[in-house]
Image (cartoon, rainbow, N blue to C red; front, side, top):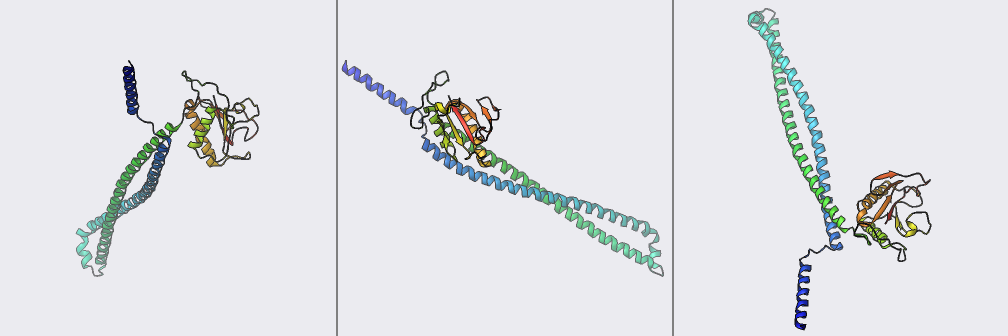
Length: 313
């Protein structure tokens, strides 16, 4: 009996170990962050190449515009030269067959002089005509080459953009995997009430959110969570944090406004996972169904222009 029990226990241990070994291990956070750092460097190089190719494309497009303008001028000159040659040829035809002997043997030689002048003019116009024709062909060839180059560079730019966007999406997916799940989540999707704990006097769920924001973003100023003043919000309950984007009641810089936008969007995106109740930022509130305006509370801080407020369940 004892041997049977031992055998069953060993078999159960072996099976559980095998099942654990077959389960795909979840990447550790340090490994994911190291991979993200490598991906960020690669994306930076892609973006740099993308920007350079866009500049090259811009220069090629400008050169193409110049080449097309030159082509239009060459075509106009070519057409004008053709008209002049035609007019000289017409004049020679009208005066040549009938009056040529007279003009050549006139005592004053004025007819011969006219014919010589006509011949010289026609020769000059023919040369101009040929030169215009050559310039027009050169301009057309140059414009065609530039158009082909633009097409190639545009395709390269598009390929680089798609590659960079794909890599950025991969980074975002890995970042999403790093977002923790708030504690106290119920099977029905709700959240169990929590008491504030620790020296910071906030709930465990709030602490998880605060640390997750700190890992995801480089915060410029301090984060304020618990506040004893009972203002009807979550601060005195240990269920809210203010992520300051400026200090002293001043408006944040454009850079920090953009950062606040990112933090607010991130909190809303991960609302269900973290247990976020609502977000307030720049006199607007989002409970998960989109931003809506709030009444004026009379100041920069009161209207949440200098900090992102995140409340938790």
